[in-house]
Amino acid sequence: MESPRQPAFDAVFDVIRRIPSTVQENARVWRAVEAALDAMNVPKESPPTDVRPDGEHARIGGNSGHGHAWPRPDGVRARCGGPGLCRECSHDQQLVATAHR
Ligand SMILES: [Zn+2]
Image (cartoon, rainbow, N blue to C red; front, side):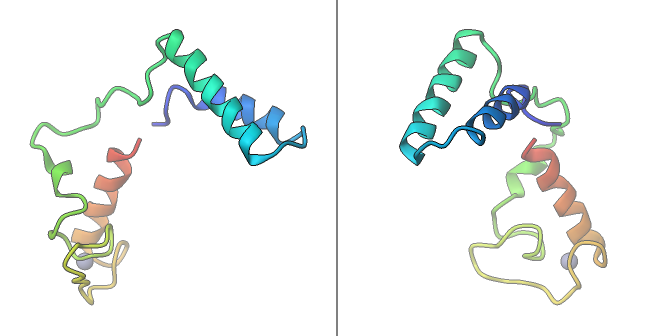
């Protein structure tokens, strides 16, 4: 699920890329767009309907998992083949995908 704001961002980006402008000018445009979306109460993220109540997303970024779906703070990375080959890594990658949308 993408952000409810994505269609607006796409439309703005479509305009920006056709008009030569500096990074600073673009930044100003994006701030204005965010302000307009805020004023319309467009949520920044999709409602977290796909977040599991067990709080499994809290594992992301921590020292659990095999170090493929997210880099572990302790630097550990299992030689398991990563997502696609390893069941746990595939599961964790799925977890990341649902957490970031
Ligand atoms: Zn693994």
